[in-house]
Length: 122
Image 1 (cartoon, helix red, strand yellow):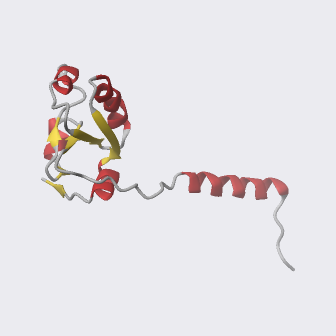
Image 2 (cartoon, helix red, strand yellow):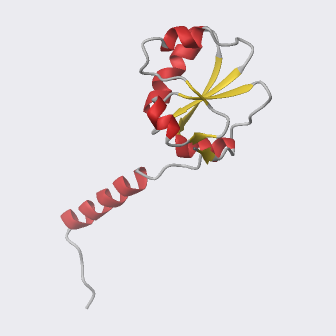
């Protein structure tokens, strides 16, 4: 005799599966870097020192001079920003845009490494 699930239990299992699948992220889209690309880590200097994308420069989003530092950047470059999880890069992107710069939000460091093909170095 086959076991049957009550409608409530079936619904609970379906909801659990849906939530679990929603937490899975899609593969990062490829970001093509050119000679005009500048990769920017917007984490703290301590986080940057702990490991960053090869060739990335560090502009700390939490610094009091962040907006001024961004405004002083080369307008002809293309910027790819990332952080630890994607939260701060999402906050930094509008600052770059407000300064008239071309910017791509690469999200968190793992996604940024995957999408750019850059290694994480110390």
